[in-house]
Length: 244
Image (spheres, rainbow, N blue to C red):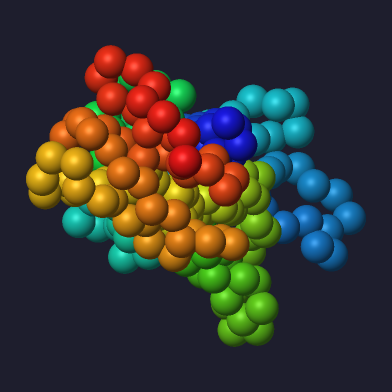
């Protein structure tokens, strides 16, 4: 039950992060013109991955789409690719996460579901790193121009979309890491010991058991020895055979 709750929490984290990362693509304010040192501001310049705009004092905006992709700056092309890759990876990661969660009825055995959940976690970590890299690359360009004393063009400050992208990327990485640990928890979960009976009426011995080494004698080839404290209940297809 506890592991299922953790997986649900991880799923909420990664989906929330994916939604935040996806929302940055259409967001207008990736960078906003700086008003540092300005007494009167008559217009505000802002830009994102697709266009650059100016808003005058009356609130009227005039936008211009970026030219051909071949004419764009390299950092904008890189940011576009990284953010789109992050969104696509997040979508497929969500599908695999749903299949790998223990609370769903698809995906096969617990071992198989744990591997699928771990794979989904890796996808979300890569998605988060892609978004984190894209936002950081864009922010690095803004700060480099802002602090460059020889840069005479319009200087910009970090826009809201960058902070949203960083938050979403962090959630994806955290949630993905939790999913990756699900396969470790599954390996640590005690499994029922498989007993091999070679002959009718043979003796079946457990491995190292706390407080004692238990020996069970069964008279059914399909019997299973189940440890309960210091006793061993022997079950068969017909019911309880005995307690030792």
